[in-house]
Image (tube, rainbow, N blue to C red; front, side, top):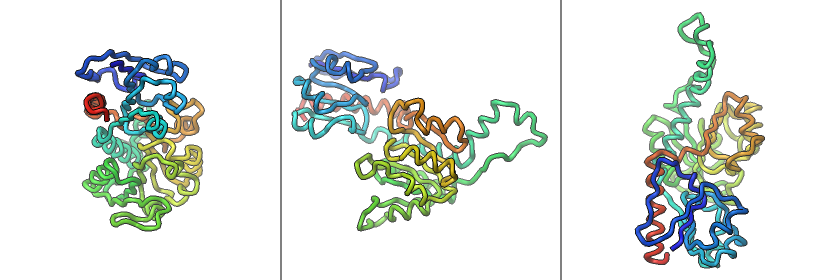
Length: 313
């Protein structure tokens, strides 16, 4: 059995990836470009990947391929319809980041509410030393407790961040799908959540319906004092619209862990804005990446491969 891991740097080097117990040949590449993909995967029975793109055209050129094991939850990099038609099984991993992503969201909430990044940046200069008082008050500090958190997406991650936020004394509200004709118990209309929330956090899947869910129109529904947090998928947010909203004080701040294209181009509007906007925090798609989460992830990837070889499913 030939197994090819196409982009192993998607896993931190200090996390050991367990090998399957059955007899196999393991080949590993740190990165694989579109131009390298066919040559590297042509003899593979199983490929492991995080973000390498598998289009219909690519998979048609890989007649030996039986399984694509994804080291992530999202499957947007694979044409699932074509894979099914070609008899290629696709297995992803869910649930591994149910602790680390909500914790990252909470960290971003505290960082924004207490202006932590601004206070930190000041300490790279002599600003405090030059102060005539024991402290100074240049940046806003507001309480997390009592704030209203609007959660878009009530799956594993959305539910857990809601639970943690409730424990902190926040008022948590969940948004119904945009455009829904019926509002389920425990939800509020999408637009109403945007209007009420002090902080909006995104945890919904990326679909045709949710692409650019947060755009110039929906940003205007939010309070001018509100924050947006996106640890879900980059294309949920219209990046230029968010930059414009921050520049024009349509909303107060944002914290972003995911972008439309990753790694981003240097001229990405949010990356450019991050160098000048004190109310924008960007982290490089690492909300999911605690050691315990990654260990769980790689163990589940190996288990997916083992299960497939045993059952063919």
